[in-house]
Length: 445
Image (cartoon, rainbow, N blue to C red; front, side, top):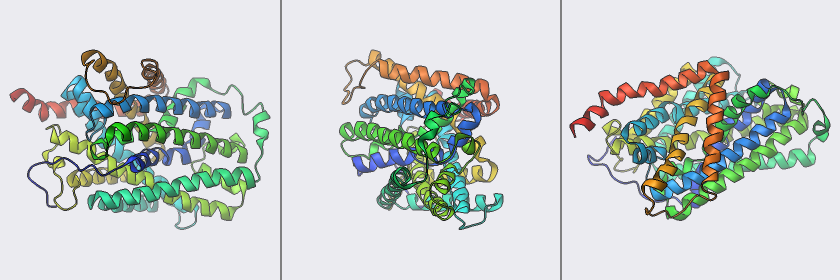
């Protein structure tokens, strides 16, 4: 790889369409096509599952509106890394980048690759096997790492195309399922659907929902590469989140319209089960193939966004120096892209899907919470700082996000201590790394 010795700013080439596409692509992916069955296994009530999807969407929207203020104040690559460094200093900023490297992007890339392989097997294209699924997932990671390494322009075009495919697939399925499928609205009148279930498990269920909604802050990570950030970032963050929330609710209604809740409990490929009941087995196979292709959009978005965090950290001296180099020809943070790809491959080879989802969900809840809390700090510390956008409904909107997210994390830790502890250990492991590397430099400077 050829890279300049000095780091450079990334060129501003992305508009509202691509920024919104990145938000939508990050959110609509593995979660919506796989998690409803797991959620039913926890709360044992279709009504509580729908409640979790609604609540998760409102929490995500509150977070997106809050991030928009921070992103327009500091329109740089890196997302919450940039905001945490400004508010709390280098150690929390380092930890968010450290966690993002392992959990925020590499792990979702691995999980999405595994979900792609599962749906591809359901389509009958390849036989499902543990070894075969992992091989397919590894091949995908390598392919999209190479694609985004070789340039933003082609990567953005592929990203927009795959996101459009995903929206057409999901929207088309919802429309066809309700108007032409052989489902029934009778579930709305069944007491079993609205039973009390296990509300004590609602925290874990919301954690799973928030994994599906993760990505509501995606445009903030590429803020340095968007045109007119004061206009583009608030629109893309809010619009992307609202579109996804509406699609999630409609899709889950379609699932219950097609299949009784007990028939979905514990099922991974819930979309395939619904299409089989609505239409036919042949249609279900075709749908599974389309879902596998649509998941490529999410994987592509993760590969695109993650390296911008490591690039921003390295440029500030808080990560390996090579991660800040911009390729002479391709104008991409190439070393960061390659390092992320290697980590994702390792997680594919070592992880299982459900454990990855819970691990990701808990770890990803911590730093956005700290970031939005920092919004209040900056309002007091720098009241006269230019704010091209001010969060609507302040302070109630950010307070709603903070309260709801804190409750989810506490309940999730209580109900799933092992995976939650694994996430905590991942975060804390970054502290000695920081003091052995960056911390020493900070003390000498």
